[in-house]
Structure formats: structure tokens, C-alpha cells
Length: 397
Ligand SMILES: NC(=O)c1ccc[n+]([C@@H]2O[C@H](COP(=O)([O-])OP(=O)(O)OC[C@H]3O[C@@H](n4cnc5c(N)ncnc54)[C@H](O)[C@@H]3O)[C@@H](O)[C@H]2O)c1
Image 1 (cartoon, rainbow, N blue to C red):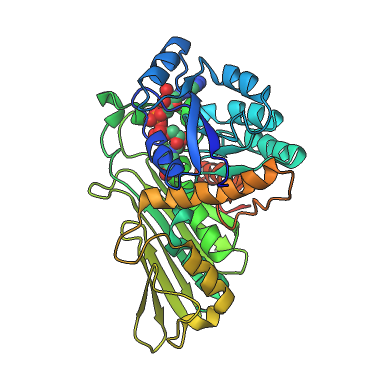
Image 2 (image 1 turned 90 degrees about the vertical axis):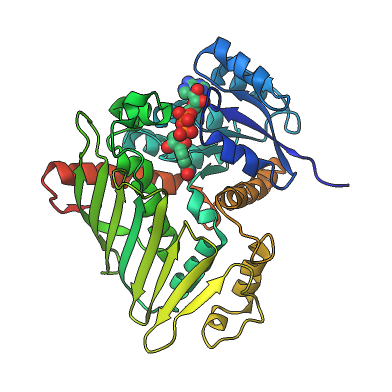
């Protein structure tokens, strides 16, 4: 018999919300997970109305407290298998902590929390209650991020000397927050967004991409958090020069004021033997440039255990077979943003099923970001804010 479909409960997602929809599509991508309920809005009445308006039947709850109380009373199989938190940043900590304590796995949006203190508490609680916990760093879910990680961590481009990891947007280049755009309103408010605007919102993605692909950590940093748009309290331009723990250097940068840039996230890793380049707006291939050789472009679905070109087979048959198995459709039928989210939920599902059966689960950060990755994001932001306030002074991590 086929396996039971996992039940997912939403925290947030009503009233014209954004990121709940890519998640919702990704949850349903494989037919093995479905959204069954949600606390969709802070106003209990609106929360119930929004659930009524949902495109397919789900159970509405007036608040996430009510959802957690009701669901945690049910046995595994009847209750939600995991909760997805898609609220603004200041409403991550409270529901996440309550869900962890109720033994319900959590997939939480980034940045993990608004303060380091909260992030530390969540990381400690996950350790104590041993509940699967994922953080929605979307771009790790691209097949090409998996390949980039294998190439760089496998040493194929040599020792890492330099990384440029960036996320550049233009949608906050004017006072978008005055135009009734709810996504902009809370992102420029320190109480709801956290101590850094642009850095917390998308600089954390750039940091995560660097850490995921290279396996390196930031040792010291010098940051400049800048505000270009009048009457803003939080940075809309974020530039951090970093020393890596292998002695290499990196730039982790983000901006929301660069007109014309949409979701221009990318990474370039320069090693002692070659350079790897990947951009998420063209996410189906990775380019590797080796010293004295023609550039190589690797497309999703075109790399497997039998690949031979004098380079990629150095990854070994096992790694190449594992990579090939993660590709969903033939190359040329493009995977993109939703597929990346889908891959994260698919991998999280594996850990949730093991958890439900009382088996060990990995949650080790190799397939999706975990709570420690989320905590590192907030730690990095906290240090960057400190450095910037001191005029870009070098600060140890
Ligand atoms: N991973 C990504 O690529 C990505 C992209 C965009 C946003 N995000 C993150 O997702 C989160 C949401 O961002 P968004 O742009 O979708 O925001 P949004 O403003 O579009 O939606 C927020 C939702 O949370 C709900 N909400 C607020 N307080 C609530 C409460 N107390 N109880 C229940 N619901 C509540 C709102 O009603 C709304 O439905 C943020 O943390 C953001 O950083 C991540």
C-alpha cells in the first residue's frame, strides 16, 4: 500500500501573503504531503474567514495557539505531521518554540528570529526535544546548489581563496512601504524585521549559500549597513567583507535598492585550481573554469555515475549517482524556484517520517538548512550590525 500523505499546518498565509504560495505548491508537488489546516492571520475572525476562502478545504484555526493546542492532543497519524511558519520575522520564535515543545516538527521561514537570544533558545530547544526543524533557505534546494557543494567541498577547484556571495534586488529602491505593500511595511520596521533590514531579509540567504556550498565559516567580518532611501530605520544596502576560517576572504553582500535587479542571487567561488559560478536566475547550470582549460558548463540532469569529461568523475560514482537521483525531470524541462522549495520539503518529509516512526533522523544541514544554520544567520547579522555601528570595525565571529 502507498504511504500515508503527510499533513501540514500553516502558521500565517492569509490576506494576500506572499511566500505561503510557493510553499503551498511545493508541499503538493509530490502528492505525499498536503496542507490540512492553518492559523492564517493574527486577527482570529479574519483567520477563520481566510481559511474558508482557501482554494481547497482546510481546517481554520483562530490562532496558532489554538492550532497547536488542538493538534498536539491528537495521535501521530491524525495530527499535523509538521507546521510551516510563514509569518513575518517577529512571529517565528513564539510559534516555533511552542511547536517544538509540543513535539511537532517545524519548517520555519528565514531569518530564524529577530534576536540572537531567541535563536539560541530555539537551537537549544531543538536539541532538547529532538524534533526535526528546517529553515527555508530556498536556494539550497536547487539541484545545481547540490552540485556546486559537491564540486567545491570535493576539492575539485582546489582550496578556496575568495567567495563573492550576493543577493541583489531593486524593489525597495523607493518608499515601497508607503504604497500599501504589506511585504514592504513590516520589512522596514525594526520591531518586526529585526536589527538589519536588507541583511536579515536576503543577506542571510547569501551567507547560507556560501556556507552550504563551501562548508566554510566566517571567522571575522567588517560590515557596512547603509540606508539609501529617506526616513528608513533599517539598512537597504548591506556589504560585509569577511575572513573565512580557512584563511580565504569573502564578500557577503545584499541590496534592495539596485533598480532592475529582481532576485539576483549568485555565488562565485575562486579556488587555487579553478572558479565556480552559479546564478539563481538561470539555475539550471553551473559553470566551472579551470586554469588553462576550456570552461565547463554542467546542466541539471546531465551528470551521473557514468559521466566522464576528465573532471566531474573525480566526484566519484556514489556522489554522482546521488546527484542524478535528486533531479526530477529531464534536462531542458526547467526546474526553478518552486522545484527548489519542493526539494527542501521532500527532504524534510524524509526526516519527519523517520521521526514519526521513532527512528533516528539526520536533519544535518546537507539537504536543507537546520536550526543551527538559522542561528548562524542571526549570529552573523548581530555581528554585522555591531561592526557597522563601529564604522566597519573588524569583529570576531
Ligand atoms: N525563503 C524565501 O525565499 C522567502 C521569500 C519571501 C519571504 N520569506 C520569509 O517568509 C516570511 C513571510 O514573508 P512574506 O513576504 O510572505 O510576508 P507576508 O506579509 O506576505 O505574509 C505574512 C503572513 O503572516 C500572517 N501573520 C502575521 N502575524 C500572524 C500571526 N500572529 N498569526 C498568524 N498569521 C500571522 C499574515 O496575515 C500573512 O498571512 C518572512 O519571515 C520572510 O522573511 C522567505
